[in-house]
Amino acid sequence: MFSKITKYRISCAKKLHGLILDLGAGEGDYTSYLNGDVVSLDLDFTCLKSVRGLKVAGSALHLPFRNDTFDGIWSCAVLEHVEINYIPEAVRITKNGGTIYILTCNRNSPWDPIKRLFGYDDWWSDGRKVRSYSAGEGHVRLYSVGELRRFGKVTGEIWWAPGIDQIARYLPIIGHTLMLKIEVTQELKSRLRKR
Image (cartoon, rainbow, N blue to C red; front, side, top):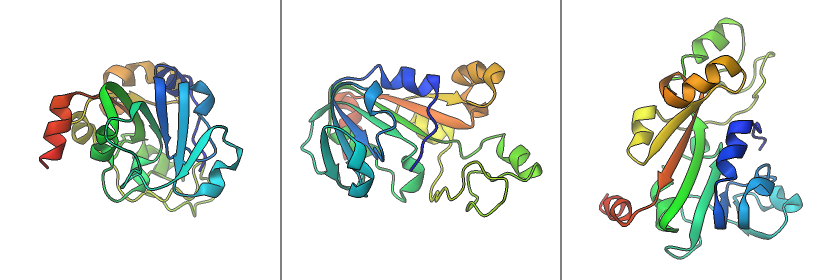
């Protein structure tokens, strides 16, 4: 799975330190930007061939790690491919004081209708259009800013529109993609366990 590498995503990835899980690592597009010991997890172990370090084949829904294992988690362009929200599972394996970054599509992206108007795929497209820059997305569940804010701070990104991109950081509802930053606390862990 290919994920667009952007300056904003790199800056977020570089903020993680210690023992880090690259959840849904694929070919490790962001592994070199993570500051610490990285464990790369993907459902498809063959994707991890070129990734250095410890590699684990596994599902985001049932992470094969003990509670409070990681200092941070990086998950780029994975959440929208999973039917069930794996955020509680990610919080479970992250230490108190740890940080989780999750990049996903904006279900209510104001840019999708514009893309369709010009014949491009939107987040729900199956990649069969000729003018697709993101063919075969395979999205099964998209999230809104409001749904993600229950877990942490949400910022927006519009990587292909640099002038508006900075505004999306502060007004994520206009973002085409969303970055969720979760600061893990005992209170958050308790709240998610009760669900």
